[in-house]
Amino acid sequence: KSIPSGSTSIIAEVDEDSSVFIDEYLKPLGALIWRSSIYVEQEKFIEKQMNSLDVEIQNTEKELATAVEAQKTRISAKVTELRNDRKLKAAEIESNNKERLHGLKSKMESNRAKLQAHLKTITNQAAEKFDSARLARVKETLAKYEQKINELDRKLSNLKQVQTV
Image (cartoon, rainbow, N blue to C red; front, side, top):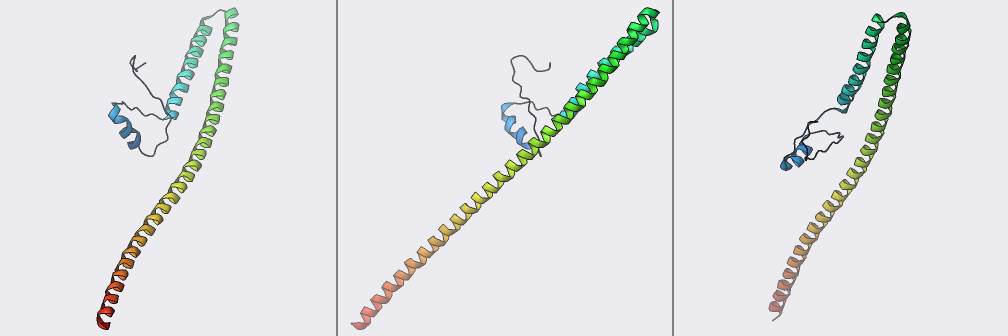
């Protein structure tokens, strides 16, 4: 309701160690960032549904208190039905929450494994690049020493030629 018409909204479920990454990425776009725990929002939603059922039960109980005997039986049955509906709804919500939590845990474990594999790959690549750079530096140093040795060999040859003359 609070998102203006014609604007864009991104809703994401994010597990983040720091809010810096998302904030810095979206800041240049003029983004308004709002964070909330999925569990808090879910609790609000569940509470709203339960409150609605509670209000209906209270209204029906008030109606029962003022009803004539024939209506009392009908209204009493309705109150019982509403209470059963509430119990069923609560059980359904609890079951859905457990399923969702299990799914989130599985997804987190899968993501953790992927990230660990990716980190290992990056670490290996970095080690290979480091080793390659070190080897290049050693080869470069060796080439300089070989060049100096060749220069010294030439000078020694020249000295030997001068001495023999």
